[in-house]
Image (cartoon, one colour):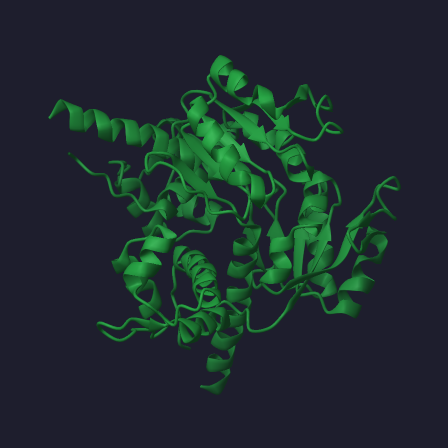
Length: 218
Length: 218
């Protein structure tokens, strides 16, 4: 078996390059250099070349990459040459914000169901979508062929929701609850913890200061 | 000047190890191996050792790391040996969800101000905090010495809000708007785009399938 060992950080950066390339395409820019991509995304040019080389994208020396070609190749690598259907379980503030998030559709993610257990929330409309009772979860996942589940329920309900989603046919989960899901190994799970992002900031605040202090001592 | 070139992915993983170590500490586990950390966080043991080695943490062969010591060293590296004050600008669904997010306080992040421009939202309470009019932004940032700004306004307002936050004294920004902020180079900005997380999932859904197909052909 051929194993592709691609760092997750590379995948995240590809998604960022993809956004940059789409903007460049819209502006009518037909070729881009790794330096331009680097400059537009805050990554080093060497890192851009390394990331693209994982997928056999080498560009032409002195010319760079063909914008449209590179853009569509990266979209294909990220699985974005098709649409994906996702459901959201938990229609509280965060779930509602995600149901209304415009950035999903532009990248090919369609929210086909939003569920809650609270009778005060069930029946409400979020844009064009109606919040359904969670008892309809399995039915909607099967009927709409949803492959992605987004979990925005409290920690105490997350494990059960995760199990139900997987049993219903969902293969990948984005988990916003602080609960660590315990599921079959072939289920793809990504945990989103907002504090993690803040900790990258504070690391940089503290280390930036240390770097400056070291510089001043010299 | 001594430059510390630490990959951002390492910082993110340190934050994840930190959560694991705190749980282990609470359970009374006094020493942990890199294999145990790896198993508990879904990272390879070699990666754990490599990440910790950036900071001179090598453990003791056959014994591992002292849980409490490693935990507090990582917290210090992440800048979490103190509290940080943050403000949220934009009290829509996402901003409100973040203002009420319990995960912040447990990691030392205190939300000291939430602002909006909409008279229907200003004056509302989110837990113990009252949403203030954005005209009070500069005053609150200065008075509460907020160092972090969280931007959850629409794209069209993000640049202005970013500039005001920086001018008021904020040094690091977490930007949830799709607008790419153009600010002074020494401001630390981290963009959060929810589709990015979904794209890591779809990459794995597609590549997982390719890997299986390659395996079946053999």
